[in-house]
Amino acid sequence: MSTDTDTIRTIAREGANAFRTITTREPQAPATALTTCTDAPEWVADAVRAAHDAFDILPDDLTYEIAADAFAAIADDSGDDYDREANDFADGAVSIYTADRVAYVGSETHRREAADTAIEEGIATTIEDAAAAAWYEEALAVYGVVREAVWNEAVARA
Image 1 (cartoon, helix red, strand yellow):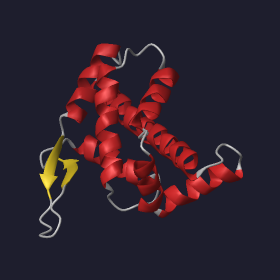
Image 2 (tube, one colour):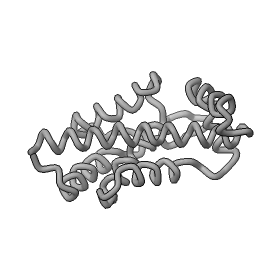
Image 3 (cartoon, helix red, strand yellow):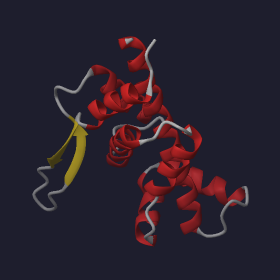
């Protein structure tokens, strides 16, 4: 089975290229959102669904963004140290802005619960830090789901 770094990068790049930006048709506040292309490979769509299923949520803009970014990051990873690369990705996924962090906590029930847990476990003492901890864990989990999908696709093609 061929799962060398170049193969992983190539497959991850295919995944990263399977997303597109759409504009919603809300008359009062048009916005953009990321989604998979209509011709995205089935394994990419399955990975995005699995990323949402990991948190038992309906399709969510941020989860799509994290998944797309994870595909792109894996395409650029050295392949030398999975844990370091995953942690670097998750760290970079968390916004540094307080408003973004507060909005993150309010966007989904599981995110508020994860922030509450961070405070209860002493990982964080402020809502901003709790949100960052929850966001980090979510990004790390989504990266793991995407990494597994890329690996499984590499094995299937070998």
